[in-house]
Figure 1 (cartoon, rainbow, N blue to C red):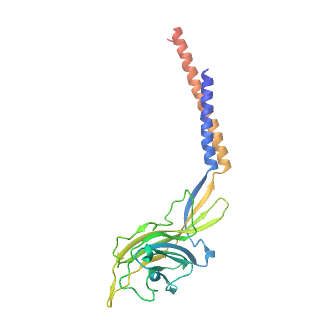
Figure 2: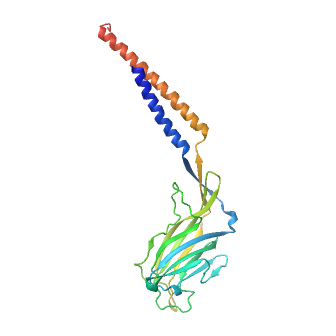
Figure 3: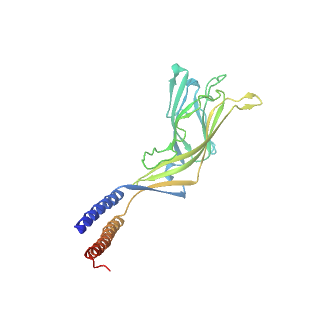
Amino acid sequence: MVWETVSVCCCLFILFLFLSELTGFIATEIVNELYVDDPDKDSGGKIEVNLNISLPNLHCELVGLDIQDEMGRHEVGHIDNSMKIPLNNGDGCRFEGHFSINKVPGNFHVSTHSATAQPQNPDMTHIIHKLSFGDKLQVQNVHGAFNALEGADKLSSNPLASHDYILKIVPTVYEDMSGKQRYSYQYTVANKEYVAYSHTGRIIPAIWFRYDLSPITVKYTERRQPLYRFITSICAIIGGTFTVAGILDSCIFTASEAWKKIQLGKMQ
């Protein structure tokens, strides 16, 4: 009877551990590593950027995107793949843009620099809905700063202030089980706001995104537990459980025999 009870408990315990190991074997794990390299060599030295920002107190005809970098690029009023959506009955604007930047330090900024006539007091208060680089990664077990400025609210700032967002862009690679790679970029950010002046007076405010690239690449790789490790674990579970069960049964049997001797008065 005792051995049957121990056997049932052992079987239930083995079943529990087997299901735990099976779940771990079926599930994939995400392994990350760091290395120094440019992972996306086929990009032509470009990074795709997605920007979505609202300026609720600046007319759309005044809003523009300018791009500069250390390779000599200086583009004022970039309009390709961009859209302006009027807000607040035309008093404000939502700017959505998809553009590319070179993999060198530089900046892109939202300003009134491309407007035909400069406003006297441009209001640069804003909300950033999205700023991301590269492919969009939606992986459950990967949590990173792919859209670190999402929800940045500067509506209570000085309307005449410029805003500087200093970005450190980190290349990120995600490789799935099939070996397919997707290239994205995380970034850290620091920001400041200020009213700038020169010898000619106040400088027209803007929203600056100044970026530099990290030489370190983060790589996430999907992996599954090898079959041999799964089989080894199952064998260890079965062998270990029955070994412990044998020890328990021996202890119970010895204790039972000793108790019988005590009951019979044979124990000295």
